[in-house]
Image (tube, rainbow, N blue to C red; front, side):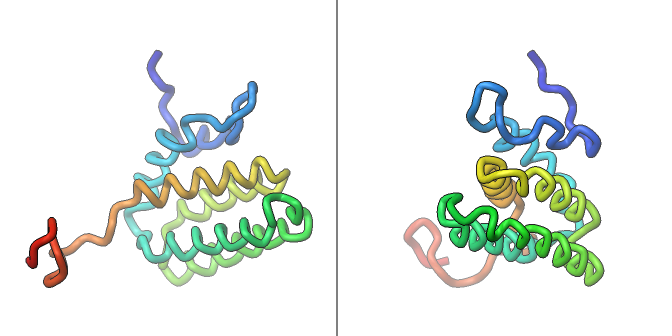
Length: 145
């Protein structure tokens, strides 16, 4: 059965969790790749990683969900920081959609927040590295370049 086409309107419409429990496969693959295709023009891997690292730090602060309610408001701060980054042209306009959609789900409970973390991790994993010529020096397959 072919996957339905993902659009900005349908992105994350089904959330992170399957009706029978567990996280949806699409948040790791198709939806993550959709986000990468939308973010890659105009968003640097460095800016994306900065936001991802903040989300991971927030995850640690939440202490496996025990402190979720005390820290979830920090997700709204991330949205504000995303808008500021967009004004400074560090991220593109779709990054705001990405953050808004994900925060809307993530603030509901720990399971949803963890879905956001897993989805964001997949986005970072698929994201292209900065373009340009390979760096000189270092090792390549155990040999000097």
